[in-house]
Length: 101
Length: 130
Image (cartoon, rainbow over all chains, first blue to last red; front, side, top):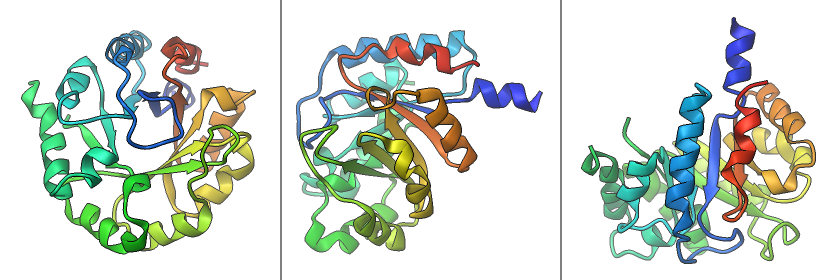
């Protein structure tokens, strides 16, 4: 049984790139919303415990929508470090999940 | 479950890296996201082991290392040794992705697979089961 569960959870995290990788500070690609939803459905269908991480252009405007689509982990670079209060921005992003509940 | 927030060290002030790491330690962030770029898989070079080790020295939260590099298998053990808790390799950079995932699991780290914005998320379907 342990072997089976290890196989099912072969991937722990799927990172959906929401910008072309290589640089910080790029604009979010909006097809990520539907990709996140489709990946979430696939994970549920496969009974996998994999988490969905979104990387690229995550900001205060798209964060809660991403969580609603099924995101479990949000990467934030410029949004955090270009803000006047990085720790406050992190706290606001963290709240994104509860706003969708 | 509450969403996890992973601030990217790539956007930190490298002249004040310790200050920015401490800010993340003291914030509601969950992970440190660490972008490693090799100038081959992506048209940019970020940083490698010396910087990762410096981050690890001060970080009190898991390091989520995103490898934007070709041939990641060659470096998985070294990144695990350097303190990575989660390593993500790119689907587009792995010829034998299943072997790469197995190797990550053997190293006892969480296995991540990153997918470019215009690659189909469906490619991971077959990796959710054997």
